[in-house]
Amino acid sequence: MDDLVLQAMAKWPNVPDCRGWLGLDTRGDWYMRDDATQAAGAFAGDHACAVSKGSKLQHQGLIEFIGRNYASDGEGAWYFQNGPQRVYVELALAPWVLRVDDAGLFTTHTGQLVSVNALLEDEFGKVYANTTLGFGLVHSQDMFRLLKWLEATSHPIESAIARELPQQFGFCLSPAQAEKNRHKAG
Image (cartoon, rainbow, N blue to C red; front, side, top):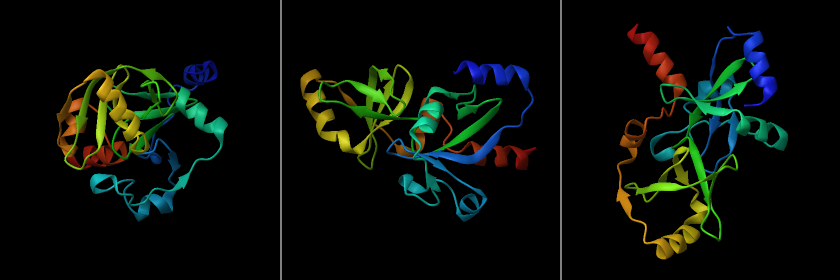
């Protein structure tokens, strides 16, 4: 994390968390979700079809700042540490979106190089990878590069059920919904 973020966390340790306001789609793009967008529906629905995405972030400096300060908590919810405040992220399908280059190298949507431990394909044909940084969706535009990598490496692909992946790999698609469910149960 950025030094300024760590300093802000130390200076203001009790800032409330924020949920529902930031989303990560299947292309690795960040979306701001204001009150009206959140009221219109969830960030992603069945099979990650957009229900109510919000406004796509375009500012490269902000996108890089979010990427440098992106992490997960002990319960599998992903967030962006914005100074002293955690801004939890609504995930379309996975906490990482992975790109595959012509050399067969995998990088996250935040630009970090990763190694693939396992590949999975769900019942809808989406391909995922369990990597050295965690679980990610392979970007749909990189299927040809992935195929070339698979031919070169003979890496196996396991079958998966999409709805079971969050529990299987320990991540939360909607921290906002999880928080609402906790309040209802408590």
